[in-house]
Length: 272
Image (cartoon, rainbow, N blue to C red; front, side, top):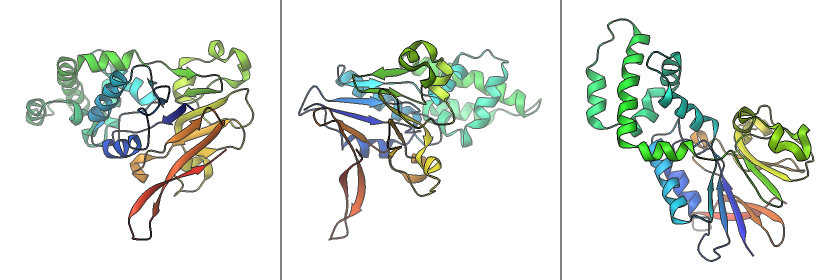
């Protein structure tokens, strides 16, 4: 009975990703699949390590692992391709708090080179100058990784589901593939609830904001056709795993519980 797993919005947190992957079985049944629903970078300390981990997994299980693109991944690509004086260089670097994402990619020598630069003509000019250095380093040392991210698809469809980063144009109904723009796939907001002819599994919007419960970081199901799996990993330290049993058509997830001896262990629970 093949299983389909889905995770999303890892945002540079490698250890929570590794914990989530330990719950996923791609070995016992080679028909099992894992769908990554985007936003692998930004916020956390190891965006580069997260991307390489996922890329390697996709290469190890080429017929089982599907990797989709998220809006943060797309914004990173737009930074890489932006011209030298394009304002997007400034905007993207300004959004990278403490240069956590950048520093996970660039070499120590490049970091030292940047630290020695002086802001001679203002902060914006400084960001324009270092953006060129950063991109040269990334394209030199991670060109195949960048090429791989560029080629990631925007959705994955099964007989029962549509996996996507943010969402689809549900008003287009069965023509959603043609009615949904790239921007919608990547950044749809707000969330849509209710009935659709297939289940839609998406990240992008934190489940805590959907439930209006600041400490809720598990998978959220709207009791109809929508499953949201962004557990706000930066706050929760957890990457939620959604599991679908193709034989029983049941969905489940996992939560950490305290065992009788005080240790923490993952416990599976059913959603639908």
